[in-house]
Image 1 (cartoon, rainbow, N blue to C red):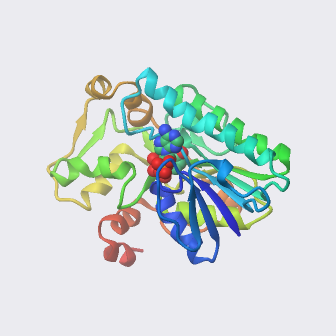
Image 2: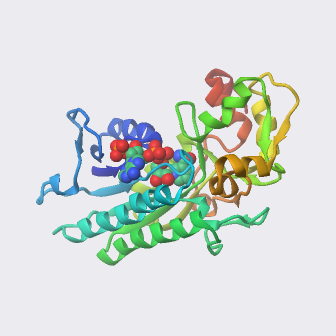
Image 3: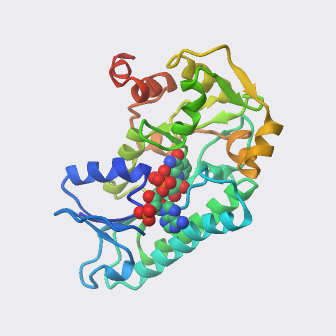
Length: 303
Ligand SMILES: NC(=O)c1ccc[n+]([C@@H]2O[C@H](COP(=O)([O-])OP(=O)(O)OC[C@H]3O[C@@H](n4cnc5c(N)ncnc54)[C@H](OP(=O)(O)O)[C@@H]3O)[C@@H](O)[C@H]2O)c1
């Protein structure tokens, strides 16, 4: 299969692309940067560089300015929205202009779709919530879903917090623990719906291959944890002092709106659609997932 991936240079793409290449697929990555092509993987900086007569068989849409990377100033919020909503609109308009649209579109979204929801279990049928992240995800998904009108099988990937060694949110989250400080944000009772990057790649591979799967998929492990439980799991990986909370008001002062939406509130998300499709998680529980991240050999030994 020839697969076009937007944002394929990022944290998820860095694991996904080698897996797809290893399965014999040909990849084109849309990237703002300059990169060296290889035999099976080439880069374009604009969709117009793709040959008119030889389009992709499938598209994976991952591009977007980091949500956790910076304070959400009005200008940065505009960049977050433009890079996802406008980027997805341009992608689907490009697909509409092709003589032969692709068979499938997998488009990233996030569990922020559900907004802050306390400890309410959330499957894909739950209605969207309130706040910037939710409005962003709703608009992002709406643009992706326009591909259905072209006859393209469309899967929306409502990703949880993706964990792995070489980047993503865990790099920041692990920082205090590396210095012996165990902590959780605010009350610590808010849920963290996480997923190991290995399972993200496996879920995407399944959704690419199974022609009967479409719609929204929560890409989260089946056992979300509270921030206190996450802290306790991290303490099994690092020698730390007894845990102390990071006070919510201080975090709000330092990080602004982003702290309120991403750290001090959360969602308890269940991957109902993946489970209904018989997806098997390699890392269903947080202890084994974190052991695999911080001590890969121990992770393989844990049940
Ligand atoms: N990782 C997670 O925990 C997580 C959780 C929920 C949702 N998601 C979503 O899943 C997608 C992939 O996640 P990821 O962690 O792989 O993302 P990432 O590493 O932060 O970024 C993916 C790619 O997006 C491109 N990009 C960055 N800023 C951009 C901008 N202003 N305009 C256009 N493109 C831009 C970059 O590619 P180039 O520099 O090559 O252009 C980057 O490599 C993202 O949309 C993210 O929001 C991720």
